[in-house]
Amino acid sequence: MNILMAVSEAVPFAKTGGLADAVSALSLSLAKQGHTVKIVLPRYYHINRDTLRHLEGEMGVPMGGREEWSAVYAAALPGSAKKNPVEVYFIDHEQFFGRDGIYGVPSEPDFMDNPRRFTFFCRAVFQLCRKIRWYPDVFHAHDWPAALVPVFLKYRERGAPFEYAVSVLTIHNLGYQGIYHKDNFSYTNLDWSVFYSAGFDDWNMMNLLKAGLNSADKLNTVSPHYAWETQTSQHGFRLDGVLRSRSADYTGILNGIDTNIWNPKKDASIPRRYSAKDMAGKGAAKEALQKEFGLPLAPDVPVIGMVTRLTEQKGVGEVFGPAYGCAWSLCRDMDIQMVLLGSGEPWCENEVKSLSRRLSNFKAHIGYAEKESHLIEAGSDFFLMPSRYEPCGLNQMYSLAYGTLPIVRNTGGLADTVQNFNQETGEGTGFMFDDLTPLAIYNTVGWAVWAYYNRRDQIEAMRAAGMKENFSWDKSAKKYLEMYETALAVVHSR
Ligand code: ADP
Image 1: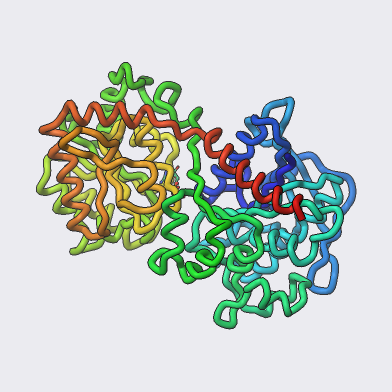
Image 2: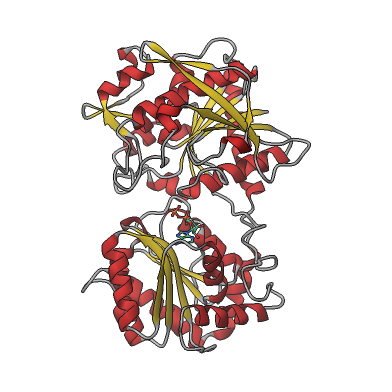
């Protein structure tokens, strides 16, 4: 199968979140199974042209009654097999991408010309196929920046050479939809009747994701539970109706994790490697973690770790909200230690720093630190993720792989990957709660801490059960292939 990934970020070239990891890992896994995969990305300013291969000639992209000209570069995706590499193509356009930032910069978080930048990008995807004379069976678009790809396929490119191609749109986070003034629709060069037939209209604005969801042959999101939740008004971000209307074509496929990077048997960021059979390295990691964060070296006190963006989505208000959050009482009432690594909203960073000064058993580092995040996963006994919503979530899967028990809200991908503790049978891989309230978090952490001090054998059994789980990408890639095949079967039967 020929598969084209249209996406605004992919590791190691451009990353702001889990989307970048997912696309590269999925592509590598599909290529490993023998398929030809090409990724198309904008050539952002920070991606050095000198490290890329230049493709002969300029490429014209029709836009708003004129043509925009761009250069194209290429590189093999690191980690690709020599025999069947995943090629990454970079669309180079000085005016649209020759600046710092992917979607924006701190002073302008959502660039004013984003609808124009990403309309250009989506149209360029088709021109690129013509340029390299390679015609995919599947156009796989990700999130709102690529959502116009299914729209263009349906309303402009349905003829040769794309007559047998299908489109798939994956939602990595429904909270971001690309909603802009409808004047921007003129950049698409589509007829205004398409504005309504494809469902761009959103209270007199233009909603790019919504049009993509209406136009793609198949839709999915990154966990089965989130696929269900997004069809409810509580989690649907106003698009629950659209998703319900497409429920026959909409599924949830869990993201995998990179088991070469997140694996206690191979991890170079922890003092001593370990496995379910020999857990001594976990104790060494706990000691190193306590040292790193300046906590008393106490092997028998449970450590609760957090690595998170400090934003409302992650439930940090309920943990750290001044006079409201439960962190203070957790650390004062229970014999525990807590460590946090994260950055985000200023109020939360300030609160976390202040708690760190006032409490001897709570320590936080503000910032982004890959190596330290591995040490937290390995050295903690529990990992807290009280997310308001969580399309898939990676940290709870990392935790399970490292024998660290997740304490999570029963939502999205967390509900699919963590099994709640049953203290009668000892079964389970973590601790769960339903309501996002400081009290529910307090009580559930309390339950985990009680089990730590009173049910040690059950805790050890849960660690072992979690470490046995298989979250490999190969499993998820098979499900994506099934989705591609069902979509292709429909087109070929026409
Ligand atoms: P989201 O993409 O919504 O932030 P995920 O759990 O899907 O949440 O993925 C977050 C990823 O980013 C994880 O790999 C996590 O370890 C990493 N991460 C988040 N904050 C930090 C940080 N401050 N330092 C290091 N890694 C971080």
